Length: 505
Image 1 (cartoon, rainbow, N blue to C red):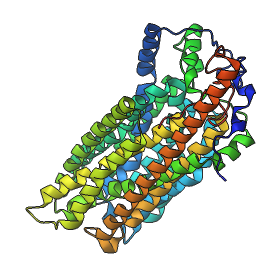
Image 2: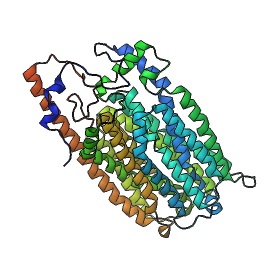
Image 3: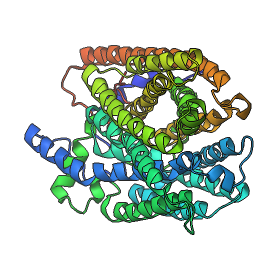
Image 4: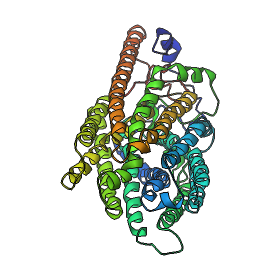
């Protein structure tokens, strides 16, 4: 049985006007009588944008750079230098995601208990060291071992960034903020492609061109980790640049999220609710179906451009730069649409259509001198579906409450994300090269599964909101309208339990 809104979830105690602060991070900085004027709110938001958002972007940029070096290296001679054969290249990607899947439950419990910023920065330091090691590994066994460890410690990134975003930003601000740090995926593509293009000109040095790429990105990641360690606060109440009065304002401005800041106490009831909540599994399958496509296209993009479409390695690296720019534009456009229209699931369905069109073109148009430009354009169309992932993150960040429940749901969703990414390269079997037509047919089926899951997810959330509104109206009619709003924000209630919580569709 899946958990849904029942009458019992609206016990009269949930409408008690008195506030109980269970949230350990917010305790001492909660004041429901505070009135935050639009001018003060704008000033605080600008300050958070300056002090926090760039560091969130930096964390995601480094993760994307560290993880993406293999894709560029695959067309820089790396495959021959490590003696990769058959499915070895696919396995280097799959093994990374295996590390993430195994680590996600541990990572999310660590995030619930440990300082967020220090956890993120510590993970970044470890990635940097591992990437140095990857740059000097010249056989498949050590490559696989290092890629597994990279995945194990990169499991911290997504949940850390989502948790930090929820602590600092209101629900209505999260579409912009979430897409901003997700845009770093596009920026990483641009940076990696430019570095790879430059280093590929080094053909007779002591280090191979792909080794220089690994070393440079490892150095960038190491420097960024130190910046995050010293400048990113673990929570609004730990910000050294905020006064005591400002800390209270920072806490109160996210009260309406009804998600709290942090509570280290593990709640078994919330864990059970997380596993029996149908929305948890909707998130899992949304992430799973999305990355089953996106992961494979990203990993094999360089090989498609060179071996299937007939472009040189130099040109292939440069052709990836527009991909990065296109990703940034798509992510920003999606974030704007979500905020403007108040819809997420329908927008994800719309963003699936260009991928279907691009896939059909790749299936039906044979490569040749006259068609390879059009095939690259179709390949670019297949980047649109990747923008659905930031939208899935927004569904996660805005629709789950209760600290233990969040830690479980985050783990489940990111395991779906990692599972899809891990399996996706195996859809590209080497015997299907260079056009991978069977892989593209499988992708068409996955688009159908994704669209169906979007419709189911929206239906579940819309029904829950309707029942909450009906229950709230009934209580208001009986008890009057005098009770305050959002007085349960720091009681560590789940989204199902809190009568003030509303789902974003």
